[in-house]
Every structure is written in structure tokens, then in C-alpha cells.
Length: 478
View: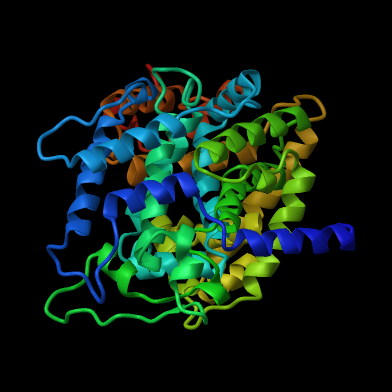
């Protein structure tokens, strides 16, 4: 990047560290009101209001349900109801620059690569998301990755699937906008808790050095996630606002740019027009999520440049103690538990290193996790051999890919065991769960692969059939 342009971008990113999301922040501030001095009592009205909002989320079951939405139920404070109605009315509007044709193409690409997208979420998007120390420190405080790893992963999937399935962003029957607006309000709640008030006035409300000291927690019972966030302490000048615009934009890169970069690194990259359509769809998601359009990328070159710059900036501001190794270990262990073959259980850190590079692996301390020499030899041997075969056969069959077949197999196991386990269904409307079941049934065969390769995939999944979602899908009728 041109040094003068990078310097301008540095100044813009510095400013973005204190910028958040006025619409969502003001909504939560209207709902919670001013916090009391010190640690709020367990029965404080703010905790009750957060619980009410979380219950009302269930009524946002589709994009159509947002139209002229009114909260249903007894005992809902009029001020809370009006704040949410105003938020939904303003937040559900797509940007004027949204291109429905590009969004539809992105949906088609997701359907074509859906099973593969799961392994890329686990081994690329999420690991890169945890590289930025400030982001990781918030997750560490919430205990969501070490103690509730699957919950965090499944919550992420509960946003990705709704926005990328057909009509998620553009059709009344879709659920993408509804799910993103929930996530946006959750971000605002986290900011309000950590800064103990509206982030929009934090610079004037917090003392001159920007420090919010940590508060003591009662020893009688473990704190809830919300109490832990409220009590953790924060330095606004050194850390910027939590979940600020730069961090939100970085997270958006991990779902759009990092996915496409990983496809390239596996040797199955998409044409430039398809990559730009996929990035465009995620930019629309970013708009609904409250991200400034100045921080969005429109092609892979822009994505690479911004990703590198943001990671360099994040690594220059370490957090002590560093939460990233514990987060990386928890993520890798969750993936290992989902792999049924003992020899392949050490594959996740190896795949993450391959897709994300040695620096990210070092940030998450993945190199410190022991990997048996046989597993290492099999992983690299199979991957490199498959890459060579793919490159050779594609001279005749351009769509051929053994790498895609193998990563799809791993994706199936992660989806069935972590995302769509029958005992722990995703917290999504039944209508959307049905759409996901149907989509996963179609993912059982790769339309780009020859029949013998699909049969090999069948043998590498659970014998005879595999469970996806709430129904059993067998190779015979998929």
C-alpha cells in the first residue's frame, strides 16, 4: 500500500476505535437507563430489562415479522417497547447500494460450497477473529470460548446460515435481517455493560485518563456473563471502545475475505466476479450490523491490505495476560471432539496453520499443541498429494477437486456433531431450521464432483447415513 495512503488509513482507523453504532447504542441506553454507582444488585432493573429484550428476540422470526413489529406479551414497559420498535423500523432497511443480483449469486455460491464453508469457519474465520487481543479479551471475560466454546461457535453459525441461505437478506420469508439485528443489539449491550452506560457519551462521562476501574464481584455465587462484563474494567483511551467500528469491520473481513482467501489456498478459488459478489453480500450484512461503509472492502486486494493493516495494529496492542492461547486451545479441542477418527483428531491446528499462516498459529499458540508425527505426516502427505492430483486432472476436468471432497467430509462431521446436534439444536426459528435441513440434504453430493468421488465422501461419513439437522439423510435419497 502507498505509505501516504496507509498513514491516512491509520488516522481513520484510530478515529474508528472510538466510534461504535449510534442506532443500537442509543436503543440500549433508552432501555437500560443510567446505571447505579458501584455494582448493581442482582435484582436491578437493568438485568431484568436485558432478559426481557432477549425473550422478545424470539418474535423476530423472519424478515416479514419485522414489518411494523409490535412486542407481544404482558408486563413490557412502554419505553422498552417503543425503543425496540424504533430500532427495528430503522435497522431493517437495506442500503441503497445493495445489488440483489450479487446477493443472489453469493447465495448460490454458499449453496455450492456449504459443507466446505463449515470447515473454513472453524479453521480460518474464527481463528483469525481471535487474533486481535481486545476482541479476545472481551470473549475471555464473557467465558464464552473457554467454558462455552460450542455456544460461541453455534451463535456465529446462527447468523451466517440465515444471511446466506436463499432470500436471507432480500425476501420477506428470509431470516437474515432479523438475525443480524439481534446480533447488532447484543453488541450494543456488551458495549453498554463494559462502559457502564451509552458509548456515545463515554468520552465525556469517563474520567480524563479514560480508565474505568474493575469492580469487586460477590464471592457467594459465580457471576453471570453480564455481571462479569460490567465489572471487568476498561481503558477507553488505550483500548478504544469495545466492539468498536474497527473491530466490527475486522470481524466482517473474517466472514467474507478470509473465506475467499481460504478457498484460494485450498486451490479452489472462485472467479473474481464471484468473489466480489460474495464480498458485496457481506457488505450488505455489515450495513445491517451497523458497520461504516468506509471500512468495507470490494475486492480481494482491498481485503488483503485492510486485513494486514488491522492485524498489525491489533498485535501492536497486546493484552496481559494474553487470552488468545486459551481461546485457540478451546477452539481446537472442540473440533477434535467432532472428528470420529483418532488419527485425524490433531488435524484442526494443522489446517488452521495452513489456511491462516504461521503468525496466526503463533498468536493462538497452536504450535505448542503436540501433534503425533504420524498424524502430521498423513495430513501434509494427503493435502499435498491431493493438490498435485487436482492441478494435474484439472487440465482435462476444470471442476475436479479431491481437496474439496476431503474438506467437505470434515465439514459434514462438524455440522452434524457441533452445529446441528439433535440434543442441542441451534437457537433459530423452526422455519429456518427446516431450510437448513433441506440445504444440508442437498450438500450430501457435490455437483462439481464425479460420481465415484461422491461415493468416496459417502464412505468417509458415518456408515450408511449421516444425521444432519433434525432429520436423517441417507445417501440413497439425498
